[in-house]
Length: 281
Length: 281
Image 1 (cartoon, one colour):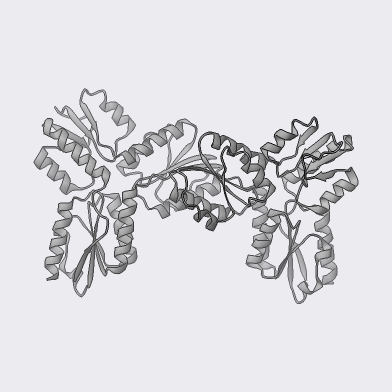
Image 2 (cartoon, one colour):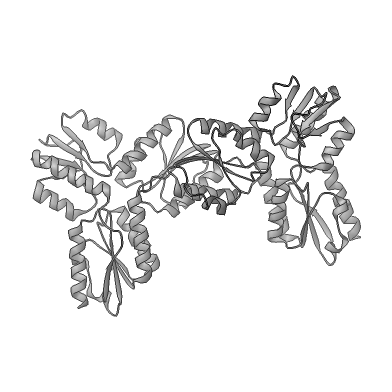
């Protein structure tokens, strides 16, 4: 069996940047916390704790004796940021710049009187952080059907997307808004890296007869890659590391494609690749 | 043969308003001109000349001894308006308010640094009037293919539509812009009356086996109705009045649908309806 890696996969700019920032801060501040996991990959989070002593704390009211707090790549809510600023700790912002952008857009547009529509999952920390910058409650929809159920689309709308969504679905949302509103300000906030990983996964899954996507189970962009792979290759699997792999997946297969989410470290991908190659021998 | 009129057809708000304004002005000003035809219907233009003495003049430098000039429903260019204001004539603006709106949007957006995209026919007087309000030359496209040929889509775009275009095609333009620009401000300037006439024509042409669309041959919205009818009913015809009708169209037909553009007067539609009913007897 041939094992092929996608042309583009793994760590994006924002994740690389956040890990670099975190390692540097943690070297000088032994008691460094991140508010929620820095990225959606438990293996990399474990490595940061083991090698750099970085702990994860979900609860902003429970910072213990830490004097150094890092904001995760997905950002935090405006309210939590304001609360954090009163705590006398040193704050390092590792929010991905591609997430800071929709936060700023939502704040400005809602201040300018536009009704905000966010295409994304309202439970995802990135979307929660972006939502919090709207002066009145935004409309958050994860698909076209949810948008169609909204009784009255406001006249003036500004729309952004969760950075890791698929452009095709975002365009459906935009189409519906344009058909039902007077003015729609569309900000294409989907991240290029996401798009490139998605395109490479699409291409590879069209020729592979088994696809393995490597990434954290809570990672939105990893799940998107998995859905894209599944669309073209019915035998697609999502794994966190090499332990999730089952030998039976590869029986009688000719081409195994591998791709990985933007928060999946290279060393995890390498372990998965080696494990598959060992099975194939 | 059954003859059915579409649920919505004929004169829109802007045309009714312009005719009312023109009749009133012409009653008190014997030498009234319109700059270009008031609406795209030669029969109604003839009636206004015959009954109210209203003449059509295309050339702004040749107003003769007229002291009363009416601006047509489609509007005129900003440059022509400014020239007209120096001529010492009384100016009456019969521009449809739904056309004034994209003029104002284009002026404001281009002043705010947005690159203007207009979905429409660059030869149509309405589009020429809207184009003239852009501080730098706008991109004008009549279909998606023309837009795809543009080498580089600007980062910040504001897009409007000719009022009489189909929403489905406008949405294709928007989709392409959103996929290729950073920010797209979408103003849905398609007129509701156009939309309602189109919907009613679509519904009727799905059950009719012959469709007759009544309207001026230069009327954009009439042509749109004709294309929609043709899509659902292959035996569709565009007529200016009852003289264009041919008996052979109705041989062995069961249902004849009639619709009419937004600039088609009721008396013309009635003549066509009567002529068809006479043939069917």
